[in-house]
Length: 460
Image (tube, rainbow, N blue to C red; front, side):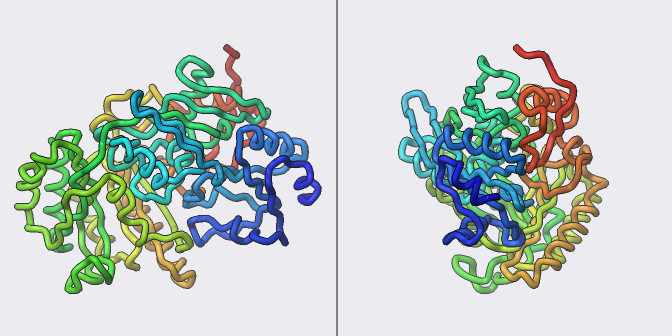
């Protein structure tokens, strides 16, 4: 059947047995081993629409691949059709308007390279290998969130291929309900083949990691909480428990040590950076301080070499509202038992500009949280997959008493069931179901953190 389908498609395709099939079905998470029936390498909205129509005709499941970074492996589908957008690499920057038109095959490193030439940046992410499509549709947390908001808060327009195969434009004036849903609702509503973003002026930052010994972790978390609660939006930092990697540039005496720390990113006046960090450096003092001036793309790609594609990954996440003493103790307990040098937990701030948008203004409905916490069990060795997975699951379970709403940031979720998805969208879930019913009543796009269609809404 898939060879028949291949002959019907306009785009370049790969099926099992073709040269390059195994490479084409490989994504970032090495735990994922799915065998699609056909992979369609689309280069335009027209080719995407054609793939959608052919898949509907043959009643086969469809997944959408952009950067392939999704931890749950939802970029691929067994025995189905993958609409692969990774070859759609166009980027156009308008430095005068501070806007960018970006196709979905670009990674954050691609976006950084294009915007940085003009002294501009898009608030989005912390890993350069992340695809722009998935991170945007899920929300978009990163180093510039406090200064510039979520990625979706900087989204102006989308070109979208619907489940019908129709190509539409969604913005605040056209298909405004669809545009609302795309800002946080994931890949449920169509295939976005072009994003238009506003950019913010950021070029050189004062940034990098700062570590403290694990024995200082309780004080460090309290200190971090206090600093970030009062800090201006130009000062960002995410908190982490980690194992110091055994190699350059880390000093040998810290190799393989379990530590806690903050990765900072200051976007204010560089002439004031030293004075901003003077009280931070007094705490501890830190056992490692790599904070200094660097171009924005350097901090955004700082962890790329440490986390190359193909490792074993297992993710779990929560939204957190406050650091209680019990919450701190639980994190320290699991920080002491991190199983591998690549495993970690991060607490990403949800504040600053993110709090200036109401929960109902976009599909992303957790702006009253203070942190999105992600726990990742990671190792290059498939034999260690069970070890990192169990540590991650146990850690996640132990944090449930401190979680906000039973949901999580959808970009950090595995396949965890309908209740987790419903809780992740909270009061916005019903409206998302209604919009899903309008644009995808048959749930054609369901290989995702799926929002099932609800009662249809009237057109208009």
